[in-house]
Image 1 (cartoon, helix red, strand yellow):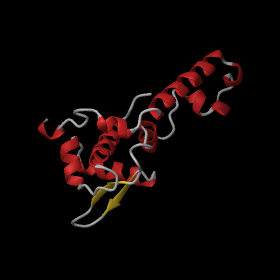
Image 2: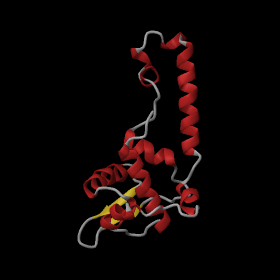
Image 3: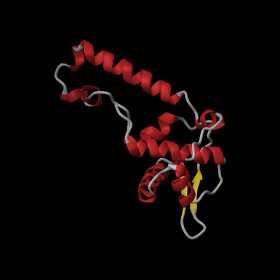
Image 4: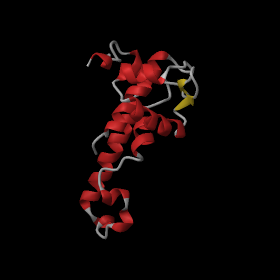
Length: 143
């Protein structure tokens, strides 16, 4: 599995909003600039994050994005899977009924174990933890 650019940008956006605080309205322009995300791409990502109820989008001249979940409960897994869907490392794990070897394949068990370890690791890290680290938000606007 490779994290997509959309996934990386979603993490930056949610981390930025987490550092600002739950319920704080932040403009799209500010997030795009500070997080180094192209504004059009940010709009697309924001739609997916809103569908997953991670952020709220407020329209209008004084609009922007609001973190809709408590950063203490919001994990990297939540954000990554909101953008790319449920994590699978191999097609035979994602669609076991399409793999004739799946029920007895020894490699299938390894893929499942690796998938669970990755999901558990991502699920163990909250945005509160990440946002509390010094320099958690590099200023991408200077790139």
